[in-house]
Image 1 (cartoon, rainbow, N blue to C red):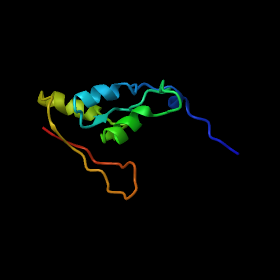
Image 2 (cartoon, rainbow, N blue to C red):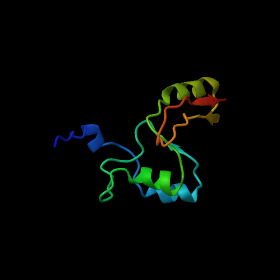
Image 3 (cartoon, helix red, strand yellow):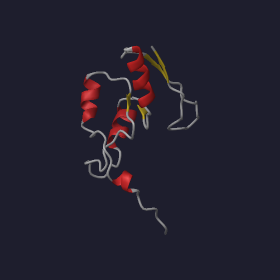
Image 4 (spheres, rainbow, N blue to C red):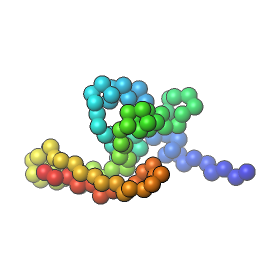
Amino acid sequence: MLRALPSLQAVRSAGSHASIALWLKARDVAVIGSDGVSDVMPSGVEGLANPLHELVLVGLGMPILDNLDLDPLAEAARERNRWTFLFVGSPLRVVGGTGSPMNPIAIF
C-alpha cells in the first residue's frame, strides 16, 4: 500500500495547544482564526493530530478560520487609525461539507 509522507510543515507548525479550549470557553469566544492552521504540530496530545479543531468545532460549536491573509486588513486599519470593525464572512452552503472558502469583509 502506498502512503504519502507528511510535509515538514505538517510535522512541525506553530499554533495553539488544545489546552486553550478552556480559556476560549471561559471567555465565550465566538470564533478563532489564524494565518496558518490553529493547532500546534505535533499536537502534544497522544493519538490526536488536531485536538484543538476537534474541541472547538465539535465541543464548543465554534467556527475556525484558517490561512487568513491579515496583512491587507492591518494596512487598512493603519490607514484609518481604526482598530475595531465589523467582520462579515459568509461561507458557501455545502451539504455535508466541513469547510468552505469565503469572501471576508471588514466594515470600518
